[in-house]
Structure formats: structure tokens, C-alpha cells
Image (tube, rainbow, N blue to C red):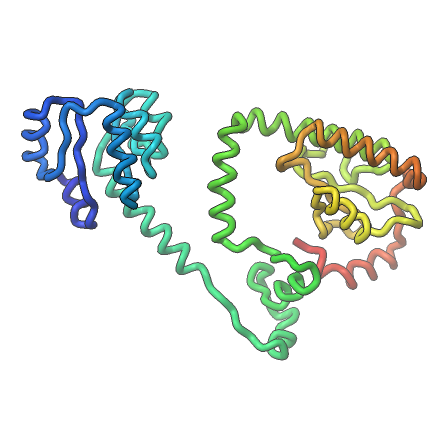
Length: 314
């Protein structure tokens, strides 16, 4: 009763659908104060009810605990399973109430509303004249809140230094869906590890050298020494890779000249191997990069850091 009252106070429409007979359904609905109820409902009927409400433009949350509830739980915008129910129901829902207490639905909704409100409060805009912004250089104690640095990075690269929060949330939702579809953490780690091995073997065959030793390298991002070759230019290298469907990290985290290549994303061994073979053919045509990384004097390193440091941190 308490859970239903809380949902009604918030203006939610509560509907009961049960496989029990109409007489039982009517008696239970009357006791709970539910005006709309359906009895003798089969699994297909529950699914059809959810579909009908969605086609009417409703956002539907479905709560259930049995095998018969699974199709409707999966179809609903928000499926709520009881932790005391069947595994099939819990696997079909997005939310599980561990103790099976319906009051958890109202609590979860309250938490969700407060979370969204907090997100909106943390979104903001900054409007500032360029002349005033120029005088802000070097005065921020926080990298994240440094408006001058943010603006300078955008002007230099055409990219935001930090991804906007709305983009983060949308991307996270899609990433979680793909993560589950791909087989979870074990499958992802295996693919990333294979990508990393293919990358290191392929670029190594071209004469390039990783920045980290093999025992320190994780299969996420590989940092490479820039080749000591007269024809090497990172901008040309970046644009050439981009034209072939690969985006490199435009910044670097080292004082020596390096570039970074990710091992994650929608890539796999077949595409990596094809790209590596094309690279070997081009290297044979143009001449291999020197196998030794570029060496910079301490003076050159310091000058490079002072000139490029602001636009290469991230």
C-alpha cells in the first residue's frame, strides 16, 4: 500500500496484470486501491499490454518476478524484477529489487530524479570576451576549470579537451549495451590484447619502437617513439591515418617526441592485419623508418615542452 500510494502521489498510472482469475484480481485490486486491473493474463497478454501503452506514447515500467513476466520486463522501458523471484525475470529486467520490496520502486525513482537534477545543476556555460580571456592565462589552479586553456586547446585542435557530460552519459549507455553484446570483460580484454599484440608486431616490423617496456604495457593505448626519419611529420601522418579510417591521439604526454595509438574500439585482427600489410608495402616503397627513436638534447626537450606543453596535455 505504501509503495502504491507513493507512486500515485507522483502522478503515475498504476495497472495490475495477473494470471489469477478475474474474481481474485478484482478483490486484490480493491484492497490495494488499484482502479485498473487485468485478470487471467497470459505472458503474451502482458507483453501486448506493455506494447499498447508504449504505442500510446507512455513510458512504461513493468514490475514482475516470474518466468511469465520476462517478455514484458524486457519490452518495458524500465523492467523491475524482484530479487526473490526467478533468474529469468532478473536477467530480463534493468533493475532488480534485491529484497523484493515494492517500496524500492518509489525509492529508485526518487534517486533517479535527484540524480538528473544534480546533473542539470552541474551543466553550465561561460561567456567571456576574448580580451578578458587572454588575461586569464596562468591564473587557474584547476586544469578542468581553466577557461583560457580550454579555449586555447579548442582553437589549436578543433576538439574539446574534456567531453561534455551529456555526451558522456549517452556514450556510456551505448557502450554498456555493446559491452554486454560482445561478451563482457573477458571477451573485450581478449580482443584488446590481440589488437595490442598485432599493433606492436606490425609497427615493430616497420622499425618503430614502443615507449614502454613490454612488461609495463597495458592493451589500451600504446605510446611510440617518433621515427628519426627526415620524411616524418606527425601532421601528415595523422591525416593519412585519418583518411584510412583510423584516428590517432593528437596529443602526447611525454617530453620526447612520441605519438599514441589506441588498441580499443571497433577494430579487430582482420582489419589490423590488412592495415599492417599496406603499411609494409608503403614502407618498402618509401624506405623504412630508422629503427632508433629520435634523440633530443636536454635543451631541445625543454624548448619543445615550453612551446608545446599547453596544447599537448590532456
